[in-house]
Image (tube, rainbow, N blue to C red; front, side, top):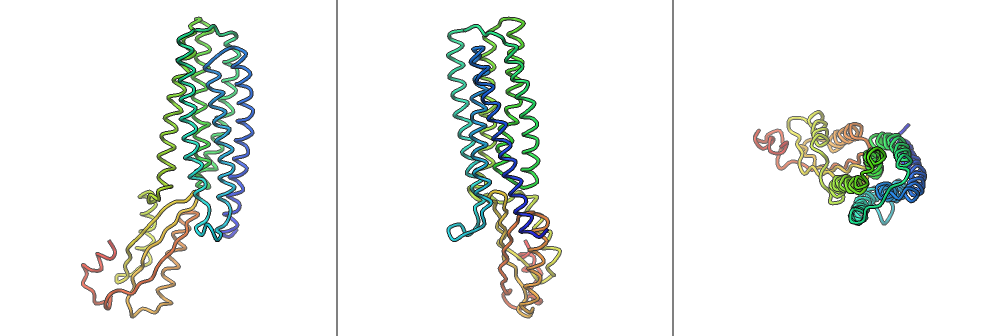
Length: 311
């Protein structure tokens, strides 16, 4: 399978994973709504709101991975990868909205305490939610890791957060069943809001970093420098290494200095090997190398100048 075929296969996996998330969130949203209304639990209803946001996030992720899979065109010469980053940022904002809604409803419930009927039904639906979301989020995390998908990673983070909040609500329903401490219900809902707000913060940092073209992580940049050290000789240097991410794609460009006495074809071969090694070590990388002749005859350059170029 060549590089283009592998890219297409990865994009298809991302789309299928996104569809799975849409289906699971739809089922959980409906079940939580029915149970939350039936037993008058603000905590279960808060989880329904959470699942509603998860469903919207899954729909956004589906749109994003489909859009990001489109090849470069006249209007998007660098491809459509940043659709995934935009999707993740919107998802983070939606999580914060959900957290605010949950806190508002919970504070009102604390002011006017209401009895909760059939708390064990709440325990049951939360248990099912936790199991389903753990399974789906684990699958999404795996696909996101294998395809470097920001949108799927964001969606998986949503669902994994839902696992812990569902367990918290389930514990609250159990306490109410044994103690009739109905104040536990809104308190647990507020704890749910805090947890999903923290998830939104983490997601915002991740997505905004790529949107503002922050460089690749230091360990990935070191992979690029290692490839350069392997292929260039004593009198060939490099500078102006620039890196960024757009969705699943990594963009890398740099300047490669070579002696004027070196044939252009030889310098081009060296650059080509560096590109191949970098793309093999960092999947979905797009490497652009600009060749520049050294000032003067590189074999006669003082050592310190060569060291500066190889900095």
